[in-house]
Image 1 (tube, rainbow, N blue to C red):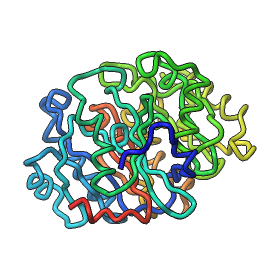
Image 2: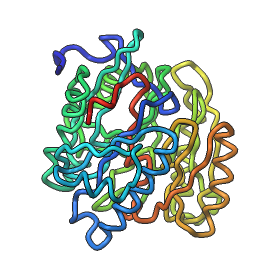
Image 3: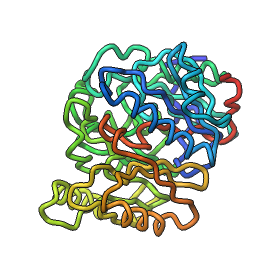
Image 4: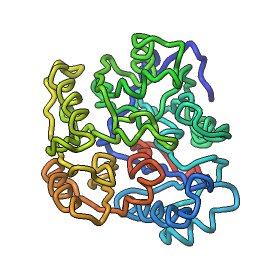
Amino acid sequence: MVQNPKITPAGAGFLMPPEWARHAGCLMAWPARAELWGAHLDEAKRDYAGVARAIADFEPVVMVCPPGTAGEVRDLCGTDHIVPVEIPIDDSWSRDSGPVFVRDGLGEVAVVQFGFNAWGGRWYPHDDDARLATRIGERLGLRVFQAPFVLEGGAFYVDGEGTVLTTEQCLLNPNRNPDLTREEIERGLCDYLGASKVVWLPYGHSFDVGPEGTDGHIDGVAQLVGPGHVLLEAPTTPGASEYARARHNLAALSATPDAAGRAFRVSLLDPGPDAAVSYANHYLANDAVIVPVNGDGTDEAALKALAEVYPGREIVAVPGATIALGGGGPHCVTQQIPDGVDISVLW
């Protein structure tokens, strides 16, 4: 049931749980846009299946796929813990075009459908992706809130305690919400994510501005690990392309407390001078961290650093080069479904 547009999730008592809260499952979307992947389409399907299998060891995976492709998904994924659900889609980045789940104090879960314009109108058509959250919410039998502005899931994190973490580079880009001021965007984030404070970092990753970029999503450079704790990619080599940008992000985190008034604890991860994957772009599955690797000399140190940041979780490496070629990583191709949602009604 789509809600009255005058009623916001925050006004109805809902907020988005953090990624580290327990999940009923994980939502993914099968590679569908052939013009994005070109000759790498089969590799993309293989690596999406690899990410899904890694997650399925810890929580069920719902793989949205175009009508007629469920058999292909079953064949390549090869486990009953990954269930294909045929819904029309245009592309395969469920973090950005899929539903955002919110919960109220009684445990009721609802869905937020944010506006989606394919990262500032980068490609067409994207009509099915722009309706994906509503379609999933309706199939789950959940309330659906329609947000009156554009927002992708990879552009922000929440801590479930009032804080939203995002980047100026993305959310203030006029190709998203040209008629909204910074203050109006902050109000919208708080109203539709159930938060009270927005903390702005200046930058996402510099590779994120090309034809398949997202204009600086935060999940390319950081991850919110826990309340008041941020992992930030920060090369230590002065000549690295991200060196200066990371220092500006660190300064912003150091200067701004979270919604609870806590100074952020920042764990720095050195990805090397110019790593081919974003190690920060990982997915927090139940009891695990799903991390992209590239098979080069930077992987071992990054995995060791993540093991120190997440002492209670298993660190699981998955191939990341092909998904990075498409413009993302494991975090971009996943969306957590909070505990308490009956995902079995989808199939």
